[in-house]
Image (cartoon, rainbow, N blue to C red; front, side):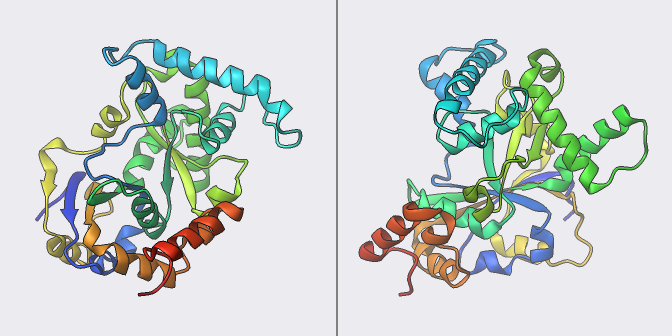
Length: 303
């Protein structure tokens, strides 16, 4: 089977299917766990606006107005709560990262470099009998960033550090200049400069849409071949991932659905890797959740 920027959906059959995927192949991806497999990828800003303006069409400047007004309000009041870590006023990405951390709606979507951390998050926030693991190929994301870098810098090569810094620059610029942002549609993988403990523990990063007048999923469509939106048995995917010459951009997006019948065994496997509520959530929040799960008998501890 020849794949080129495909969108693959699959479902694990046995609890250990995830661990049979070739780890070198999976290292190309960043990951997000979601508690219901029927959910698509939406930012909290999208969900907020859609809940209040169901008939609002994409392209409406209200999206920018919402973001701008919330950002200004947060920047104005933030020094009353925090005296030390205060970003510069034009470090928009840092501000949105702080807002995201404390629960304000933003354009940022949380991802992790670790498949197992994302799996934990999916199970920890499960809302249905089936949850999902979204895997997005960072090579495909970086390809468009590299093209823009080469065009702007008039060079033929770009190092990994240069691309990371350039993605950050593009993300910050897209927040500050809505007209420039709407000319381009990228999903930019970035890490904030001011890293909090939760991001560190969860090996976290953000995917930042350069435009918010189109949906996150609409931008995502530009990264895969719609003719190759396929469902594959997990056994076939495992076999394919272990082929010696698997292309690094053959699969753009991989969505792995997981039934609740696998939850206990997967939770115990993650526990053996020291991925638990206590290690994922800083401070007493993590301890309290871990103790609750002990009493419920559903996680963080062996059968």
